[in-house]
Length: 75
Image (tube, rainbow, N blue to C red; front, top):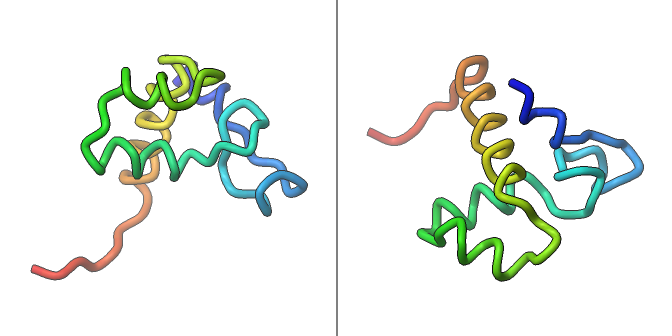
């Protein structure tokens, strides 16, 4: 869980939504890009300040949330 140090939540940044290293880049944005089919290399190319460890931290954060929250989805 060491990667989670890269995820920050600050009420004064993006209304307190989880961001990467106190930037304005939302964890949700990175996850959406991955879900859309973009590769990690493509994301890193589009966001030069992002590091591979940041993407891994987003995935780790999502996995952690999946353990604690469930949402109904259509079958």
